[in-house]
Length: 130
Image (cartoon, rainbow, N blue to C red; front, side, top):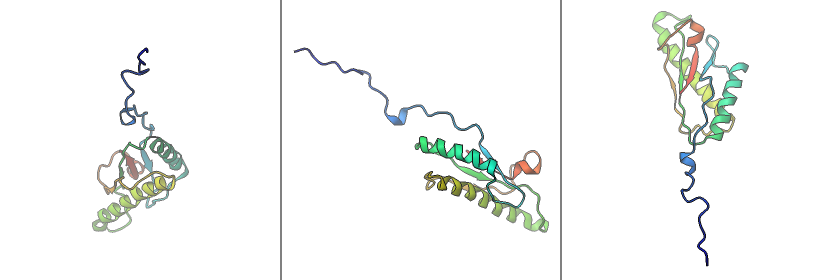
């Protein structure tokens, strides 16, 4: 009797070692002033992320919400307001991904307020996907 040779003597790596495809190219979502509404162009980006995350369940991401320093309130109230809206923006993105079937139970969504500003104000009203 001839011995039966294993067709794959080295073995294939388990799924956890499989190569993960590259992330979607856009890693931020922009918002209008004083808004937490996901705009149609942002929905397209988030749909790409949802598809990516559903196809790669071992990938973890986090969401960091930001706000510009623009504020109609008295200056001593702006930082607190902007922190609050940045949390709401991060949660809006989290909710959108969850509505597309993404497991968000362990996905951190953090508000950073008006920190880390760069460029003109509209670029600071954002959620960064990290």
